[in-house]
Image 1 (tube, rainbow, N blue to C red):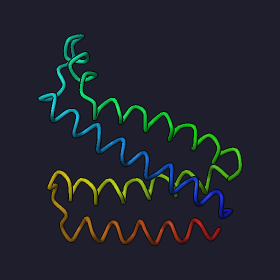
Image 2 (tube, one colour):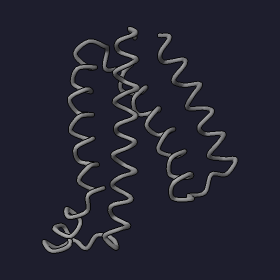
Image 3 (cartoon, one colour):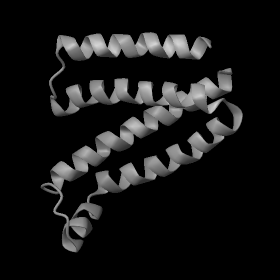
Length: 120
């Protein structure tokens, strides 16, 4: 991938991670999600949840730019891998989700995969 492609993929992944963490925080503040009209409205009243939507919109625009300049078969696995890595770490820090040796080993394998794919 080009330098510009890397920068845009990293930015897109970071914003997607932020969006997911904000979604989770917003859902927690709303007391969960009840699948009803009122439940959805309650969730949409959560500023963190709304900010997550905004970040996803920006991420989508960046992603469209990435796939217009980079091979999808390289850019997408890199995006997903980085996002998975950062969401796992962010959830462990912010929501105290379990981060055991199996997850750490999996994250190391993902990092190796990013390296291999990006070199192709």
